[in-house]
Figure (cartoon, rainbow, N blue to C red):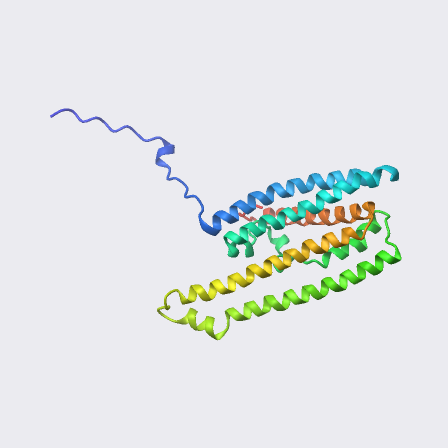
Amino acid sequence: MPPQEKPQPRSPQERRPSRPRPTGGMYYSDDMEAFYDAWVGREEQIVADLTAALALPPRRRSDALAPLVDAAVAHVAAYYEHKSRLADRDVVAALDPRWLNPLERTFLWAWGWKPALMFRFVETGGVGAGIGVGPEQRRALEELRAATAAAEREVDLQVAAVQESLAGPRALAALRRQPPRNGEADEAVAAVGRSLRVLLAAADALRDRTLRAVVGLLAPDQAGAIVAAMLRFHLGVRRAGRDWTSGHGGQRRV
């Protein structure tokens, strides 16, 4: 009988079980988290550029700020566009923004920043930079504020209606029935998901529209000061939430 070969010891890499690749919503959420980390990095550079331009002499300031304000608006829009693609693939992942830290999530309204918050920066951002708004601008901004508040109320009503529909008799009957009939419960939940996808798009469109409308009513130096204040606030919330999570033993990467 020929001698049997002695089995060779396996390397630590071979012994270690491979980590399963995230699938479904988890994979899409991880993709969004990677995007968001890079997006925040770009935002920090945009704020630095805006801050430097705001410090320029008045004759050079407006010309320097105009393209930077456009870049900031496009930067915010890129976030909504990426989140929209996530929602197209998995609306549940888009409605559960795990890429945000706990403090960021406290500011969520309809799965994003409340559009009316923009007017707070109009009130405080320009003042801090020594830039006021004229009477005509103020009237236009007040009209825009009122229209934005009305649009927010409409979104609130629609979100409430969709949430109530999930607890409606038809959906509840489908969810409670055992055994379920041919995917009836899945279809009931899917119908709610489709409605929420529409509302998510509407809320993000309102956020984008409000930012663009406010910027459109302002001169470049005014818009630059206000957009810089808005982005600084977001970065401050991001940083504070990250530090809070780290200080409280949070395991989740932020």
